[in-house]
Amino acid sequence: MAFAFGVIVLYLPGGFGILHFNKGKPKAIARCVSSLWVLFMLAHVLAIYRIWFSGDSLYVWLVALFLGQVVFFATVARDVSTK
Image (cartoon, rainbow, N blue to C red; front, side, top):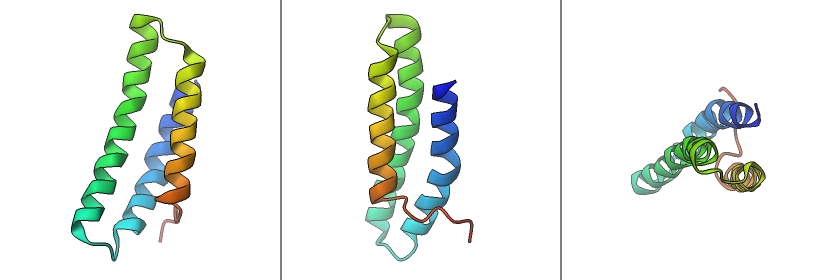
């Protein structure tokens, strides 16, 4: 359930935040940040796979992904409005 919440919180506001961040930025920076966002989405899938098949600790992944989202939204995706 926490992973589903993390993915939902990442997809919708993260998409709007990336959209607003990329406006007015050089193309290289915009592509780099967009790639980082996609990699972060894939990290959620990797976490689910690792927890399910290799027995990694759920709480380690939860803390790592939560801290990653906090840093991502504090630095890049600050403006998550739908304008």
